[in-house]
Length: 184
Image (cartoon, rainbow, N blue to C red; front, side, top):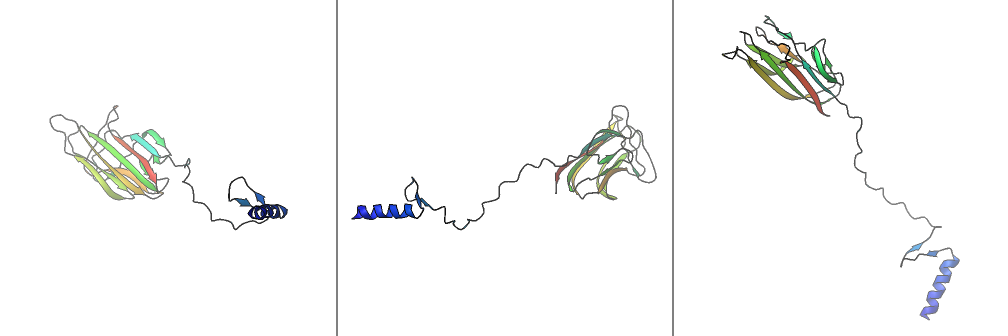
């Protein structure tokens, strides 16, 4: 009787269009669509091949100062200027995108006067590098660096502090460099 019941069930399923799959306990019914399932998880973020590339390095002014007021130092020799954020005519870096940037500057002095340079952001002092007048070696170098969060259009530049002086020669001892670490 069980055998007849099983055979009858198979014939009934085939008659109404149900198909039996090879896997046990799996029945498919193309005539009756089920309720759609929930969407899958979002995948990992794809590669961002359009990340902005911003970096500059410039060597700078020869024998500047002293002045009674601060002056912007113009580093006219752009050794590299990827993204064109640095203007070698004005000495000003303008952020092309919002992000965190790293800046470093090196100042050389072989004069009797002290050296002093300030890194400025939109007209405000951020960091200084100073050095007393050269001692027995007659040459001194000072440096400083900083990471800054900049908004698009923010400006960063160096100013020679009043009554201070810097010097350079063909060895490009004064440099101003910066690059984008990551966008925000």
